[in-house]
Length: 453
Image 1 (cartoon, helix red, strand yellow):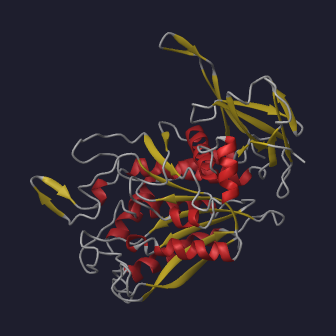
Image 2 (cartoon, helix red, strand yellow):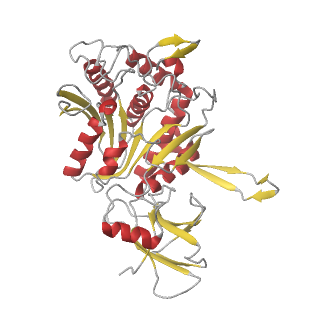
Image 3 (cartoon, helix red, strand yellow):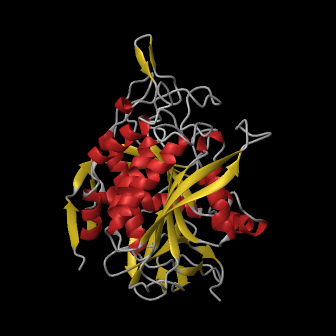
């Protein structure tokens, strides 16, 4: 049976004002899972990946000790070793696809491999899927050099190591919804592996409720400015969806919901849940799809209409990413293991694991969340329908924030499927979450104006 661990934070003073008491409720099952994450295991994985010399997409596939082929086999072997403890609930697949050739960033057409571990949900009436991503390919400064030493310890050995730890832990757990851990090739040459998997998910109509892409989650010290901090991690999320239709645009403009895409709700969820379970960690929400002018493997999923975000270290070190391994002017260059903060990776791994577990244990989304706009009032009437799939909620949370705030500020727990708040819809934004008896919340559904009929 699950138990709840409750932590209370006393009232403190900030700028002369009292801050209301905050209560953090932790599910003991999730907390126990997070405590199993091993920084030592993560370090071993990163070192073993670096020992493959390069994971360049054009590197050899036939050498068992180096290259992209050896990396795919390494991942498959590790995952198959873990899932022996899953009592048949998990499978590992090598998913091959064709890429490269004329007018691409690869000089010739080749077959690349994604390695996918699927942990089947135990609730046969719930077909929801949560996806975690990490690319395993690497490259050096010359994008076309497939033989140079390209260690890729942080980019993206850190993300791969985190997902392998999650695989190890999930192997011993009973999860109600399906979890897919995707180890992707082709990222460094155009997000190729992610684009292929996103297209498969779209074609096969997977019911994905969230995609978490982990790419570079291990560096805690900047280049040039020499700032060191392993207590912050970024979550990037799109504002206006790539797939926005004319009807969706009309709704967004009418409801002033440009800061409330589904991906943004997922980002806020990761912040709340990650900070609930991981001490000494602040999840910073960055309101753009990715770093300025750059991209990652979540983007193809966004372009197929899925809810997807990128988790990434707060500080980047440009002396390391894609640099040749050398010393120049007394500065160590190259993406080697000594540039990875393994405790930081452990905490970022915990942000992932706690978020996916809390979301997997939660009821499904409330449906048709509407604000009644039939008359003018300083009160706000909100109604919604119960989820159509999965376990039924025991209650709901009404989320409230002022229009100039980026995060939800208040939660009101209620029974039933409607509420009238003494707050003006002119001055506040609202959303609704499903919640079970143990406090697991669904993602938030933004309340839009209209009729519930």
